[in-house]
Image 1 (tube, one colour):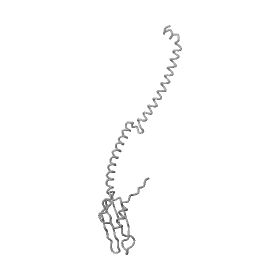
Image 2 (cartoon, one colour; image 1 turned 135 degrees about the vertical axis):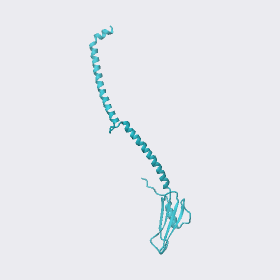
Image 3 (cartoon, rainbow, N blue to C red; image 1 turned 120 degrees about the vertical axis):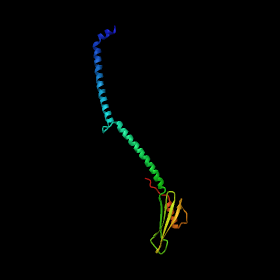
Image 4 (cartoon, rainbow, N blue to C red; image 1 turned 180 degrees about the vertical axis):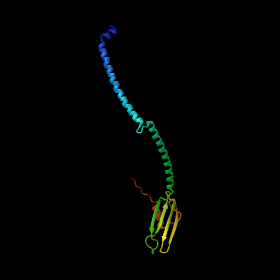
Length: 170
């Protein structure tokens, strides 16, 4: 039996099978075409964006903004370094003692005030108030040590200023 005879004898079932295959393939093609259409619509929505700009334009705008933020951050870091350096020179440690040096006056109107920077450099100012006069003295402090003899009150003010600072942790 040759091929022509086989095909001729079974032509009906072969055509029916091919027709079913064509219908199934057509249905599959329709399903896939609809899926591709939905994917294209989603892609168009993504690439178009909310204000009709393309995804590329949106990403480029965001990248430009990121570069601006990095540049701003670099500038802030430089300014912060300058501020930290300057802050170490500012008076940040203070000690104050009020006292009454004379028996004929009251109210603790005299004081010793220590003002120091982060390195312990600064000065102590003392004001002695009496009934008929007020005297003011200043003594230099370097590295937390006085360059001249200190009174008890001045030494106490210096101890207060150099005491460790309790920091709140939160």
